[in-house]
Image (cartoon, rainbow, N blue to C red; front, side, top):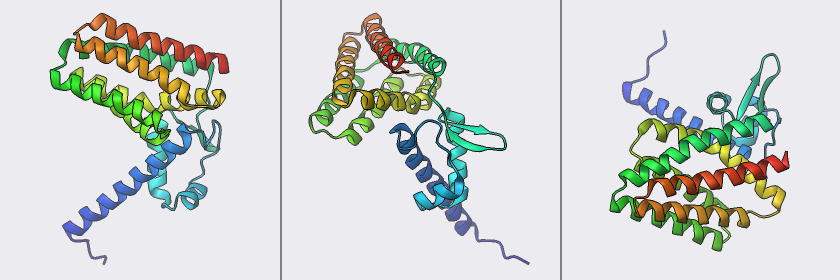
Length: 229
């Protein structure tokens, strides 16, 4: 008869398992969004486990999570693959972002406190500094934080959830544009101009301008990706 683990040990084991699955997810997100694992690449659990140094169970959980987010596709009898980038898929992503990001900017301008505005200003400045320092890892981190903060300032939990969920899809397209341009600095500067406009509009409590600023930026990025496909 197997002796059950003590409660404390069982909880610690579950925590370790969740940590490994989270680590596997983070590593795979990085590889997929940065095109190290290109669209259509196979995602075999055994190979990924050897590459990442993580067991197959956490890898499997991470892949299931990525499939739910749309970065991974499961083909019956064939396995898991990095999702392709298609013209229709790109259109759906940017159409959705027009709705979610535009709404977040509008509501943030209506609901922001002075402290919220200060946080957004600080994140904008950190984006600029990361580009100046040629630190793409820091830039991506602050970019994610900016969108999370914008959604949080909008004071809508459902909106915050969907914006967080779609961020990695948008990030992969950002890297796709950057790779084709040969540099990430130009697209980063355009993004910083947009974040500055949004923060200024939110500081003025101008929801229409905040929404227009982000919608204009999203439309330009959609056009950029469309020209690459």
